[in-house]
Amino acid sequence: NSKEAGALECDPRAYKMLHRLGSEWPCLSFDIVPDSGGGGRTRFPHALLAACGTQAGVADADRLTLLRLEGLGRMEAEDSDASDADDDDDDDADGAGATAEHVAFPHPGGVNRVAANARAPGLLATWSDRCAVHV
Image (cartoon, rainbow, N blue to C red; front, side, top):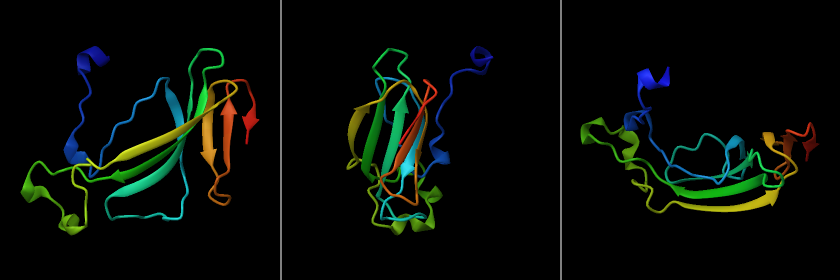
């Protein structure tokens, strides 16, 4: 029971980086779109491309949204003794330089699943609540 457990709280000690985004409608599926930066990035600030799909529940309101997030910086450590050895990176410590750009496209029906193809950059597929796959 969630009332007995209380409200969920974020423990900043669990994250090196945490940024929040909001949307007009729920986005229950998203995927990271491969870019030229490759995987396994460790240096801050980070950048990424993502695709997400809405489940608006209102006819003709669903969207497939592409996001470009840049300047995603490391969270400041609450305790300076708890900082990692890799804090010497050229970091944007508080994420103040973070930017988000997006473009949204109308989507026929709610998006149950969105997937990016690593072998074909720029190719996305969605599965809608109207039992159709769109590429």
